[in-house]
Length: 231
Image (tube, rainbow, N blue to C red; front, side, top):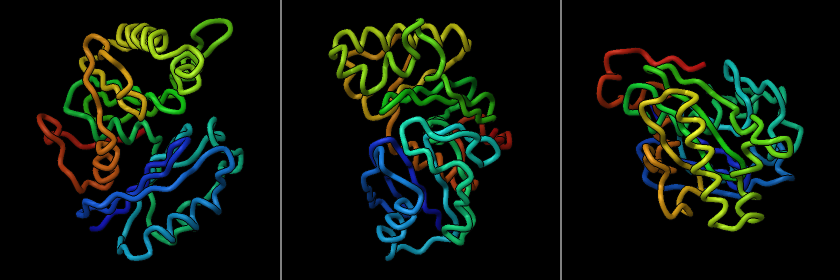
């Protein structure tokens, strides 16, 4: 089955077709509304043939549906029917959870995405759990996302921002008692040194996660023994 995988971010939308090495993308941003999304996707993929779609979307997702509006996109997405818009089977998951799924190698894994905000997701023995850790408080004045997101990098400068990232990662490592922590997102490459006990993710893992949502790409290691569950 050919799958179109769409990774929606606060700044860009990235597209990949299973079995095809080519990647395509276009801008999103603060004025990006559903009709623009559908129009752009259809235009960018007019020469691609696919039977199903996986979408990683930067918002809280439960059972494939947005439970509230996204933080870094316009407030017009809640209740949007992706399947009706594309007239194909569609599975929707939080964008960080999709990348977590593609990064998973077994055990208890936490994914943290350093991008426009702070994406997060976990995979616990093949159960994929979407999280919104960026909305937790860092202090009375800031959330975790406001401390380590894109605007924090600009405000604090690279050195202080990296120190904040290390601090936040250490807190979450201890809080979730994980075996594995993956640091991904567009700003992960700005880290001079990875936090202790972490490994660097890759944007390509989001596309792998999108294929895994349809069972088209096997897990590595002990994950072959168990079914995949997404919550």
